[in-house]
Image (cartoon, rainbow, N blue to C red; front, side, top):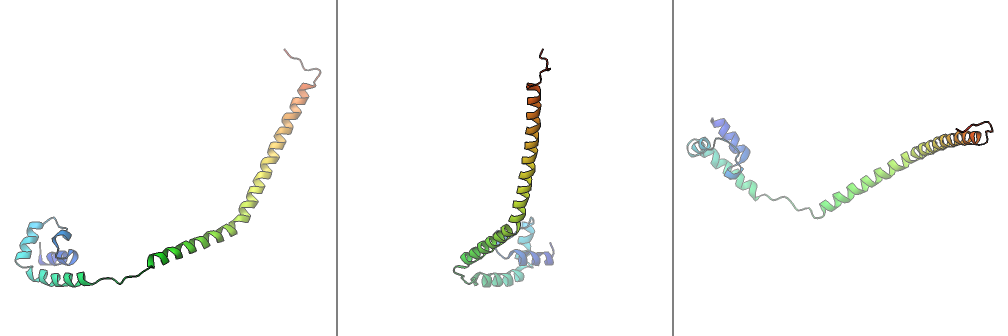
Length: 126
């Protein structure tokens, strides 16, 4: 471990041993006891200062964000429904007409075949 890698590790993870992620713990402890003591002292002061800073409280922020997202999502869905509903209705009407016409044509053909064989006087049954 070099002094640069030691400094980067301390700057990245801080002075707290629980936050440190390195597979060279023995070498790190040797550097901390000898050459890296000054780096640890400056980083400890910075860590202590950062631990005293608290973020400002934003009361009701989550509720306002949630309400805004829900309103925006609802508006988009309503606009999408109004924009697509005439086309979906038209497609369903055309599909229903074609399906009804096909079924009616098939039923008519089946009925004609049935009556032709039923009233055929020359139809021989074996």
